[in-house]
Picture 1 (spheres, rainbow, N blue to C red):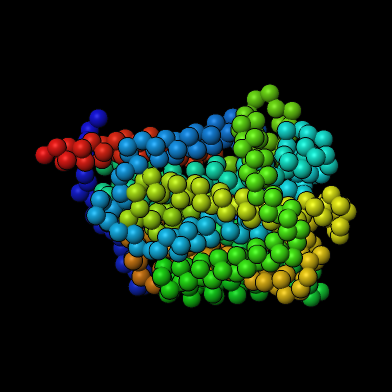
Picture 2: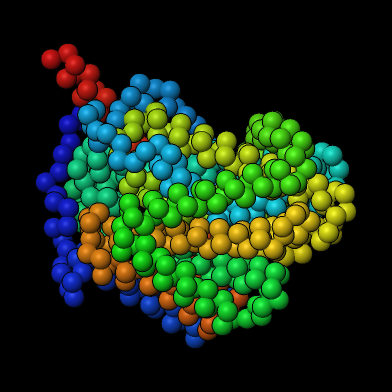
Length: 525
């Protein structure tokens, strides 16, 4: 194994300066052209685009379910292995590096970027849907509405939001952080493949990897902005009977994009960090309110019960053969794994951006375990309250989930101060969208600037506006069909990225082993 590898590549050496922007040639231009072509094509032919992308999504899920399931399990085991091996002592940025952010701010940012909005959307809807066997039946084919269904509902929800997605993010984040901070390489996806590709990663193989990462990121973000606008508009309609129309949804996107632009201009410290801390404060308040105002003892005892349900179901849910609930596994688990993987370039790069100065062991423990524990508490509170209402025939949830975007508001409707708390929930959703949008903009900006982390402000604004523009235009021009097509496209990118991530694990292990040998060699000198 070659221990000492370095590169003469300078960050930004292939860049060109146009209109105050510092752009990588050809990644920026090819990405921009492909994005515009997709938007125009989807606007002109929304139904055809939807059919094509839905077909590709279905094919990927049906034929490669085993690959998604095996890979998801592998990423968890790989991360845990790195944490317990001596490789865990390696510090990102060198042994003398210091963390840039406090531990609390670091937790807040990685959590807000990773899945904050998803937890708002699915924390009530998903467990209730599993309990009643809506949408593909029940997990592990247990009897719908039974006590066993209640436990598998919480266990399966945690399975989708616990260790597995965060291991996917951790693989990408750790790879990028190591090659950037320890090897001085550009903060782009291609840098993680230097041990396998060598200097070729600065050529077309690297260009293709980065372009795919840009496309997956911006389309995933645009989809979320569009769907989030629909959810926020639905929440406002639920509370104030405002029209849930396209113009309201586009208005929400414009507002979110404007705040995201302001946040991006302010940079990491003044923008994302500030909003993430505000977000976490609001989220903690909402959490504590539901614990106090809801079925308090049930929720508190539910923390332990949910953890047990998660641990007891994780192995049967991780198995992909001999399942009686194969339709549920395809509809939920495989879909989720493809979704998380398609988002991994974005979330992984952002986590890498904020994690300098942490050891590999500290990084993995924080990125895997802390969000999982927080998610157990969150799901037990919101999902547990939703399940209790559904089982006892309280409110709209007594009939199951009629509309996933409204499930949380329907649960909050039977707690005190409904209007105030529901409005706070809408605000929290919107701030989560802003943090996702501006952190995504910073990531895309870094990739299209050849790995520079301090690209000009106009460039940051360009990508923040582009995300909102894509979402708004597609929503206005193609409605649900366009957004569904976009979502299917984001999931479809999960298949090639699964291969990319597996190769990234090989590359990272080679590099960390070499770094550890180098450190041991220095210690003996």
